Image (cartoon, helix red, strand yellow):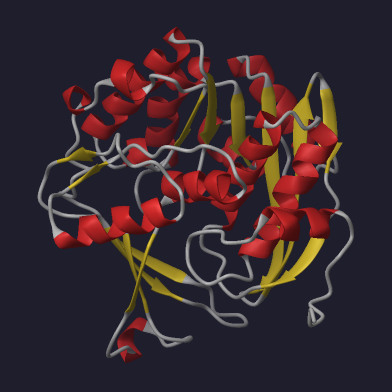
Length: 323
């Protein structure tokens, strides 16, 4: 997608110009995996025009394989971003109707060819929210990935501006049988799938994870938990539920430069950590550290290095000048 942001903290009504960046949920995850040294390929549908060429060139420059991207349609999806400040929240306006991916159909993707040589497939709940065709393409991708024995991970990523909780639950629930690792939050799980987990329960994350595993048969569930008192700072942590046990991370207090893409940075780091063989306690700490660093980087893509993340996991931090 093309992201158009107001400069600084200007409101939409004040902006005479916008800063252009590129990003999107699954693309952000692929960049994170590739930046840490993993192998990542991105699959989507984009038009044959200069904006799409620029977006793909940027992904190539970040070591993401885009050879499987399908070309077609007439426009790249766009979203507009207004950065919040203090008590004013960040605001997003989507302009994705009739984009190439919103008009995607299952027949546009040859999943057998796309999954050649792959061992892991990750997708986001944002994609099926775009249109019935995109949702059907997701369903076919999940079935094909499962049929080839790939590990399948899924980030619920609910967006209220794209669809209702009832519609999201209706479309997503049947696809959960293909998923090994579900990434969400206790609040999202309650909203979309209707689990009766009280918001104020001290063990709400573990209870939500157990409910998800019982309902859908997930092997692992990762639940993020954000506590924010303003648009400028957040308290960030997560819990990984695996092998019948809950593994909570430490919580990090983070000043925010740009919070867009932080959840995707968490997903990408978690996937990378699990794929390299880290045990659950180490994997969740790595993912939380990576997403904390992403809060400090402008743009959707997490450009934190492997060394920086591992240093933060090891206790480094504080923002002191490195000389």
